[in-house]
Length: 381
Image (cartoon, rainbow, N blue to C red; front, side):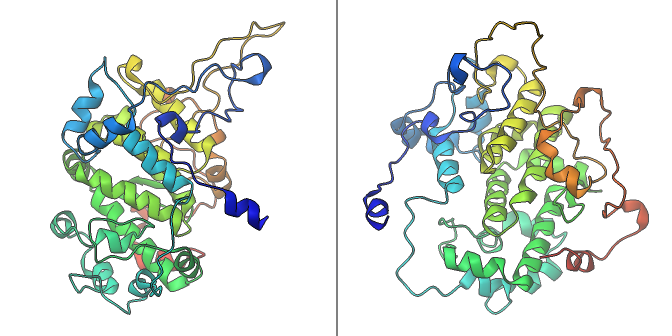
């Protein structure tokens, strides 16, 4: 076994198709090819690596040109730069080598309030107690985000240390660090106009959503921050928190029209931080139903030839869509776990409606202000 593993070599993907396996195991599909194989991958023409290098900055979802370029109806393409970045993340950085220097666990020590972030010299407790609601500081300071949401990749703050496998394990087993991490998450959600509802990661519009959504729609560099937050949630033990946030942002961008500038970042980046194929497929099916113009939707599902039905009619095509509204009341844990399998018709719902589950513990505006830190303490970590 050791020799076999030692002879294995990681091969860098060179196309979008090689980076995206979302539809390869589409067992939910109603239109399979003879023999159970699909006709194609469902991926539109991709950018070559050379094109990606040249256009990486322009296609970055923080760039003002990103939306305009992606909207050109005759030249719509998936970004190889984005696809490769998310491929490496979902596969735990297959070519990553642990640093040889002594692992100081600086990210964990920061979250234990033992060292400040560099270069600002600010401790995590100061951020958690004084920065909530200080939108000017959260908007214009660009050194804290790499410390609050660490990754196994280098960010713009070169003083921030990349996560390692050993540190991730220590972090996930340290209750105090995880408690503070969730509080930091709620600070950023509030900055975006969103609130955390329950221990399952369900989210909804916050009371300040109108002003914050308007700002978020115009400040596209925050889309980079959202991508980083989603990645960090997955690294530090909160993978299940990603789906509710991505779902809400998709609905606001495609259905409610409150975040129209975000829709391509949500489709190119946010969805592809999800590690489960089923979740990505469900969100993409939902997005396809609401994307305008429909002919410009380039993220699947794959085009397939229908097999003539023998004695039965075809199954409904919308079977596996994620169609829940994230604006409103939270669902029960069981419903949260089976979210991606539901097939409610969202078009027949009124904005903001959710089915209420008995016993679901949520932060509701009508019940008065709940101390958020006390609430976080109730979440089993």
